Amino acid sequence: MSRSFSLYLDVLRLGAAVMVLLAHWAFPRFTGEDHLWMRYHDLGGDGVVIFFVLSGMLITYAAENRRSEGAAMFAADRLSRLWSVALPALGFCFVLDMIGQAASPALYAPVGYEGGISVQELAAGATFTNQIWFFSSQPGSNGPYWSLGYEAWYYAIFAGFFFAPRQWRYWVAGGLALIAGPKIWLLAPSWIMGVFVWRCMASGRLSDVSRPAALALTFAPVVIYFFAHTGSLHWILKAETQAILGADGMAMIGPSDTFAWSAVLGLLTSLHILGAAALFAGTAAREQASRFEPAIRWLAGGSFALYLIHFPVMHFAGALLPGDVHEAWRQGLLLALPCIIAYAFAEISERRRPALRNALRALVQRSRLRPARRAQGA
Image (tube, rainbow, N blue to C red):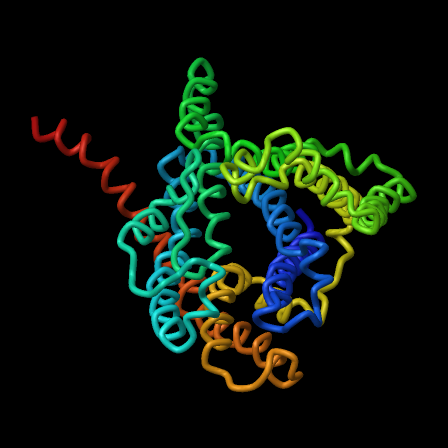
């Protein structure tokens, strides 16, 4: 993977986080009806799909480069990625929620938070069982947390297939998928497409793609995406889904109710990334460092924290700030404060991941040494 392409993926990852941020900022309870077009075009849902494709691609890349370390080390790496932000976010956001809800209960009513700390929600969030089957648990006002209950199970199912002995891989992966449940399966195509994106890149075939074809592959999906939104394809597909499943069925699948559009967007995103990879293929020998690289790397390095805590911070700020939702200064603060606090939070969470990763890896190493020590003692 070339340096330029890696930097581009960071831009894409950061852009997806910003899409989610803007979609939530556009809720009428924060900014009135001034930015409802962001809600209409479901920027938040689209940002999550982009995350899923990137995740499938990058997790496959990491797994293939560390296959010899085994499933336990893979689990340590993935848990450190999730827990480094998720665990501190659970506690921090509940504190914000309790203060904010006490100041403005009406602001928290749309997310169903009525104060206090729920042990059940904390436990479900920490174990990423918050979305299995038709169970849905949201920790306080933290709406974006739902996707971690999908992401963690995609990691687990992938690991079950990737690391299990060949004769057992379908049984192990299938068993884990059965535990996760159909709601999580519905959005899996986007993540799986990311797996195939990496496999295609690793095959080396992209170096044979001509520059005109690579340009078309890069930009055509973007054009199609905009035309699809202009024609409201995302809402048409959702309406068709509801006509088949009914209102009760749509309620049962929760965040997966846009699975049809998500599959389309997952395909467009995958094709776009393949096109970009083809454009960057073979440039490693002559590429130069961009002057923007340090800033992009730093911003992308805090994007998980931005994604995970911006909504509770937005509610907290919205509850305490004076003024009307249409006032520009207030809208600006409701956009700026979540970013400032999220990147400060990233310094004590996301950017501290290496320490947690090393600790979990050390636990795995010790667990592997115990049988040998017992055998020597015998």
